[in-house]
Length: 303
Ligand SMILES: NC(=O)c1ccc[n+]([C@@H]2O[C@H](COP(=O)([O-])OP(=O)(O)OC[C@H]3O[C@@H](n4cnc5c(N)ncnc54)[C@H](O)[C@@H]3O)[C@@H](O)[C@H]2O)c1
Image (tube, rainbow, N blue to C red; front, side, top):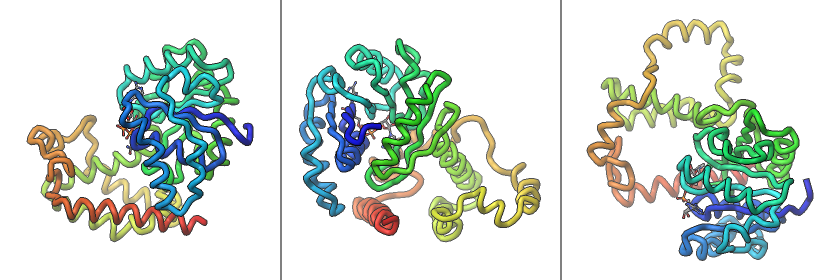
């Protein structure tokens, strides 16, 4: 990997501007493109505000160039990462278009949350250059990036991408098989499925679910992963627990009817003021700020 690469970020929304910020801070030249002029035009202002807020080098924003035409944004890029709308056909069309304008060596990455990379990249002429890079929000505070290869992805593309993210201070992991949700979102949503089920079955209310997690194993999770924990307590004890608990744990193959009912009733969470719980504007702001402060402290303690 060249010390200074040319990176193109497509999509200047929540994720895209943050990804551009990380690469610019790592001394790369970054182009950013969005089909919506308002989002493109505000990208550098948002990046600068983040850099200021975090106490990071504000001159990094000068390495970011807002580019109104997709072809111009990607033409000279060594690496293109897409963070547009989570929609399969939008992403498929976008990558086919991007491939028309880039050189033969350019690596193409999608930041999809859960869509298999194989589906997104199936229309490309050279699928060996394509992979997934799943970042977490906010990209400049959460270290993990899952690097997902398909059956076509070359080892060179995976290794180059991992090296790029490591050098930018991220913590890349290699996901060897392209499954929906990759690793992080599968684990996260396995937990959410049981959390919703506990409420649905009247075992406890939504606030209790969150308190139980935050005040118990949630405290340990940042330093003790589940498989480390299983080894710590013993695989024999883990097996005994699973024999008792797993038969009763939610294992339906689709979304919960309780969740479907909330959506049907327009109880959409923060954006409608009520989801599993009611949320005033102040409560929403307080929770957002608490998460941000927590992630900033964690980054500071990473050093
Ligand atoms: N928000 C998260 O927490 C999160 C985390 C990880 C991954 N992701 C994934 O990252 C991607 C982007 O998510 P986001 O939260 O930044 O969304 P967002 O809505 O904030 O931003 C998406 C941007 O893409 C632009 N866009 C849409 N279609 C386009 C196109 N064809 N060409 C150029 N620009 C286009 C939109 O104008 C918008 O600015 C999605 O695939 C999402 O699933 C999101």
